[in-house]
Every structure is written in structure tokens, then in C-alpha cells.
Length: 246
Image 1 (cartoon, one colour):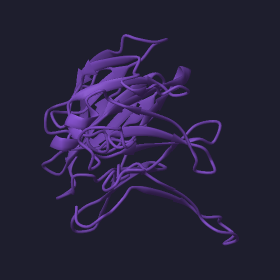
Image 2 (tube, rainbow, N blue to C red):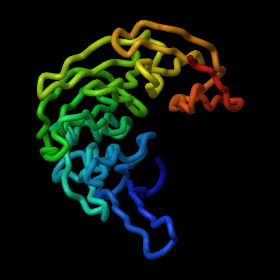
Image 3 (tube, rainbow, N blue to C red):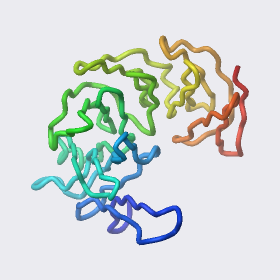
């Protein structure tokens, strides 16, 4: 958090030709785009990014503490911020810690450090305070996984299932044990998530019941399993651990 930094998105052609495309969050300082999953891309090629707290704590909204929709040319097309963005900027309680969660039916979930969840219309994010629903959720860090109309949110008090039907209200489902806080992945009908003690949990996607758990060693806060074929690969503090799955 040093210096006069800004949040950026940069696009480069894979053939190395042409100039890069760029977008910078229009805040005087901060507004980092750092959520571990990176941008989310919809069927039209638009990108959605989560933006962290900016320097402004009043006056004109500086597009920090937000969800932004960018065109494939990285032009700002739409945006959302909580009505309380100024207070959240002042307290470092922004939406920048969780990547946007795109769901069927044109819905999107957003959450971050403040404990609130927001149901957004992906095609019309709504500007400041323009959510379809605000609800109590959790502090969330990392990236969510989705299965149909359900999202699995990496909450600090335990992974949480959230369901969205044809619109509000959002339904809160099961919660994993409090130590299971890692960014999840889904294989088949099983949700895999890491715990703070270095264990990998396999959870039933419908009920949250623990199907299995195994120690994989020390991991960082944002470590996320990767599924390849019939194995899970986890980056730990001492190397890569591979776990076979049936």
C-alpha cells in the first residue's frame, strides 16, 4: 500500500502485434484491482472486475469500492458501488477482496470485507446503491465457485452456499466448518476447499456434509486447488501436493 498506485487492467494481443489496451480506475490513488480470480468474462466478451478502496472518502464517487464492467476494448461500460462507499473507503472495507460472481439469468453476486452481499443485474449494475438486493453475508476473500444458480463463497467464518433463482431474494444455504475458508473448486458434485490448518476438504455440494478431508501441509490464504483429470493439485508452502480423487 505504498506510493501513488492505481488499479489497472491491461490487454495484450497473443501474437505480439499492436499496442496494449489499458484501463485505469479514475481515483487519485489506490483502487487496486487485485482479487485473486482476476476478471470475469461474460458471453459478450465484457469484463467484470472488483475494485478495492480508493483515496476518496467523500464528495464525488471515484469508482473505487466497486464492480466495474469493461468492454473488450477496456472502455468503462457500467459500474456499481455500495451507497456506503465513502465510509468503506475510509475503513478499508471494500469489495476488492472477492472476484465478481456471474450466475445464470443475468445475475451477479458481489461481496468483500464489510460483511454485506449484493445481488446485481450484470447488464445494468446500477451505479451507486443500485443493487437488486443487499443482504448480510460475510467477509469474503478470494474467488467463488458456481454450480448452476448456486455460488460457494469463501467466507472467513466458513465457506457459504448462496442460491439465486429468477431474482431476489437471495437464499443462504449451508455453511462449512469455520476453518474451511479457502477459494473453492467443484468437481462433479463435490466442492473442494482448503482449511486454515492445511487440510483439504471435500464437501457435498447440496448439503455441505464433509465427504473426506486430508492434510496437505501449510498453505497461504489464497491457495486454491486445481482439478486435472482425476487429481487435485495444491500449491503449498513447501511444494505441490497431488491428491487422487475417485
